[in-house]
Length: 349
Image (cartoon, rainbow, N blue to C red):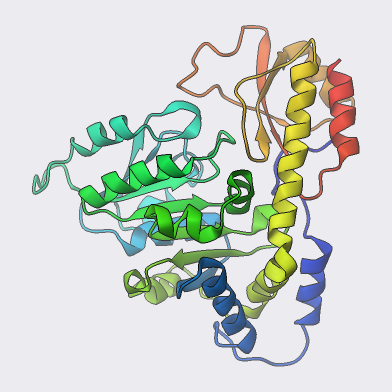
């Protein structure tokens, strides 16, 4: 009953097999192999147009390089207050963008509120050198609250970005989970809604270590090769990242894995809703679930083998958790089974 993180899950057998299959022999390095080029063409296919793809090892690297690519002196990028880029990346986006700042924006359940975004942008008037200059907006899809931005919500934020001359970046560490939750194509969730740059995650969804920085408009990628190299993210044996993505995309495996993880989260939520001892903090659509349970019950669950993280209540819900209660984060993955979920629900009582 391991619900700590989808990062705890291993690699899907097909992805492990692909790594083994491509481990022998010699092939050109630094992204120039036939396999690297094949995967780049696959990205073009799934987005329905030519895109620029750069393999990196972590989501933090993808996010940091994305914001670095559009940074300017005194730059500020806007994100949700609880977004991974501002809360969990140890200042890497600011570091790699040479001191650009991240400005938090409030919003319910992990989503940027467009009105509050406009208010934050207004604090940085164009040409006011002391404040700095807005350079990007970044949103997380799926969010850190397990929710997903609906198409109209993404379109609204994109409209604000374009009105202020900023690119829109999407942190897609759980891109596949959001995609299948919305039943959209990659282009429908990005290009058609005005997203310019995407951090495309595979590690949380069955890969061993595979992330990609995708410029949906290749003209924006001019400095990306140099940023990638300077950040120590240009892998000499990049074929091993390509090998993972090759298997990941084969026969839509990536979508099947995400559907399974989401289905296990939905199963958890149904069990929590039926429990007399637990309640959902809020409904979520991807593979993260946030129940509230008594602290004593949390200790019992841990003693019986359940693993999870205690979570902080979002600022938008300050009175969500009682004094003797605990908010949990439960994350499901491709490796979660119905037995894991049902046993946990049984223990909730």
